[in-house]
Length: 317
Image (cartoon, helix red, strand yellow):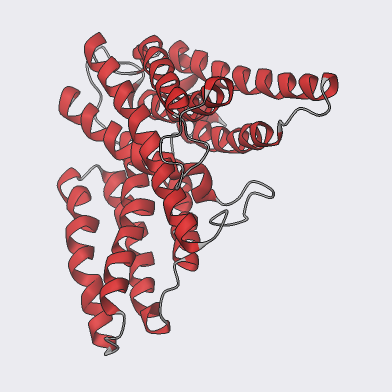
């Protein structure tokens, strides 16, 4: 506890305001849906309640990562990658002969997060896209089973990129160097990213329910509409502007970054929807009872995290 008190988060009013805002919005949404359910018992609130409950869990995890100034933050996010990778590979139908290569892929998780922890940008940025891209096929070849090997090579590396490389950018945010005049630091950036991704998911869903008529890609995600997409993009960009104090960006930069986070969040969501539809599953797992797996909750973050990180890194660092 003493480590927490002296870590600086309780001395940073900006971070405390955002944490209070996140929990305030979640509390308001929970109470609102409860009241509506009592007034209108026939109202279809199942999806909204499910999303709210799952974001309670996810918000708690990521806020905890901003509070603790220890290795726990990196370990917690790495654990999310581990579970997400396990969920995805378990439903993709890998061959029996792929098991050794999958083990190598699991071993890359602590290495990737250690590189994020020590802030070695050069190694962090190429380890999975380049080194693992070259090593995993070698391990598959050494097994000697060539039937279906091309599919295994592509799917295994894509799974690693999505669940480990993409998500690990959240951990690297915590390792970014301090900037003069920017007091929120990496913790503020992590909160900004997670909250904006959350609110984008909620806003696109809400506007879609309220005004949605024109389907974007009905064969992939029937609930996605142009009204929900555009309404969510506008709201997310505006909220990002209001939270600009959590970033070292200028007004124009934060508007652009917020817009890109909204677009990337939508992309991550529909990409995973297409994968699940292809496989014929509703959820990637069942670790969150009634709400699917970890990857079902962080599929948007797998896309928004690298987009947000590299834009901020290029513009400010």
